[in-house]
Length: 392
Image (cartoon, rainbow, N blue to C red; front, side):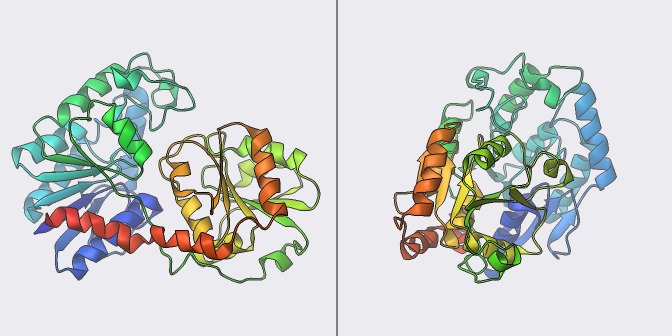
């Protein structure tokens, strides 16, 4: 058996790390496999880069101009197909295909022609919408019947609204394909069931994390930032903005008393310009161990995300023994129970503040019970389910 994974990255970002872990498990089982990608660099020996970064930037520009997001990159797709024809995969595992890395029509024509069993993991909603990876914030449900007059079009195309054309093209490309849709959360599975892909087999495989890295990890973090007597309220994201709730933390900074300290990880210079003096900003962590140290040192992790599929940060916090307060958006609440945190309806900052204070002022959450829940997030257990799929 040969397995080919196709993604934007190899080993980088959440989807790239999933590809890598699946590849390693396949290799351990003696299964020949490859990861085909286009963005960034990777020294992984089974990774095959089939387009340059310059080429991908040009395709992104074409999408911006002409609006046909996901149906450019013809030259790169020809190279990809050539690689696939040489490798002759029995299984194709698709991940993120909206990094201007493929022409969807060409790729699925190849898959259909060769009758290749295909799995596609939906890390967001882009596959069954015209443009949108998520639509909760704009409260749009056009994707149920047919996207058109996209209210977010200018985020994706400067001049043309191709949302109806894209919707219909995406709807047609999977016809006649042996396709299984993999969803990282029950929430995503429900969305897919209501889309034009609802007739395909849908399976939920939660993402996982490395519990050898994300675990209670002692450090001098509190001493370094002079926080020995503070209640640390932590937020972690890598694209801070309204979608991740930056405005929520700005409001919390006004409300929480002086013995509370907000710490935001994953910020940058532009974000810093918006932050008050009473928020500690950490641009990048040196490695995942340092991130585990920050989770461990914190009293509560707050995920004010307004759109998400199955956020890894929730799992990471729990694995470090830190309770979570999250908005009830997407799949974010699915990993939280009464022993690990509190879920709040999105945008209810009053209740969010109350939940933060409750966790910080009471011994309601037991570290041992939180860590017991973390066992559910083991990445090896999660990604073995991918391998089981391929072998059935």
